[in-house]
Length: 167
Image (cartoon, rainbow, N blue to C red; front, side, top):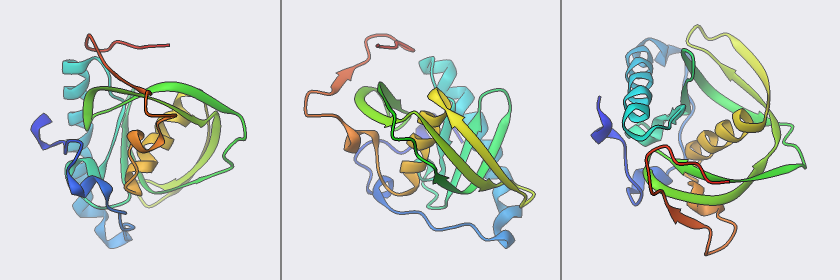
């Protein structure tokens, strides 16, 4: 798998709602998780950003997110709960439109429940940038892109340099 395998904005597969993963599917997912984790690193090397990717971004319509900050983590059949009323505004980016930034709001904190590759249950309480990141990836599983959450029609900006952040 390489960067050309990432679906780009406009591909109709990005707008589909993904199906849950069943326990019997786990063995077949291991290599996909490894490939997705490597893809995050390749994206990070080229664009200076990238911490997670959702399966639909590589054409797999399953409820899977791979997080790769310090080490790869498979997030299977995630559920978001306890979304805070308090929100943060940010310029969001996406591997499916790497040079476009979108101004939007996300919940400052949330709770994430999911299964791992050993089919074990996990619950994470997330705040700040990790809360925002997981909400972004979770949206992909429901066919929602950051562009759909833009604050208004002027909340778009081209990134001028790789890894550029805008406050």
